[in-house]
Length: 277
Image (cartoon, rainbow, N blue to C red; front, side):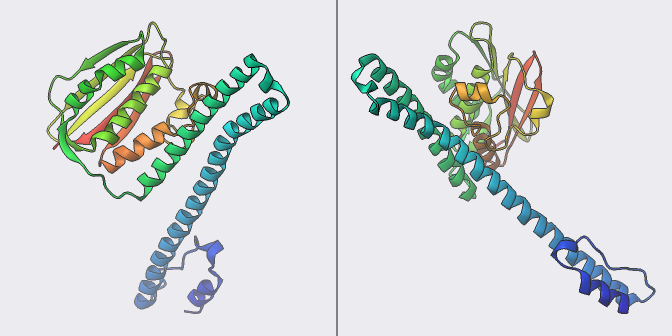
């Protein structure tokens, strides 16, 4: 009893990994030690979850601040140039306005994505309706072909794909993944496949490309907020590393899964798995 008492006295927030001795030969004391050890384990997990959440929030705020600062700094710089007299030069004025317009579009998209992520974090469920995913994708075909440009698109839906989904949010996921495929494939030799399959319990929608692929060390982080496997390429397309995070949140609220497979110089495939209606 004395050993257990002294041990408890020395346990604090910094030593929650410590455990009380068991199998001391006294049944009641051993049961007490086991109960306290279980409580300490739960407390340790709770403290770790709180620490991880604080660190994640710190990184999120830092990343968001960095992404917001970049276009604002650019706009501020162009305004300074204009105020110093460049506004009287039509060519310089036109170039500055075009650049500021592009940066403001990027800033607006970033803020919209941040607001959407905040909404997704607070929504327990979506307003969903039964529909056929294959028909929804084929309705989007003109828009997808416009995004693809000269790239080849192949649609493969051998069977109907019924599921309960929020159409608007699911369309956004498809557009995010399809746009990602467009960005990472050759404009003339690129091939993007949209493949749907189903079994007795779930459906699978895969968007696959023949692009340059993603290095293995990046795959586990692709759905993290603000993560960019290729920062320079993302910035060229106005991305802030939020599209895949938004897609993952939406699919999670649909009780589904989203996963990725990639091979360098072969291509990448994003697969969405949803329960069948």
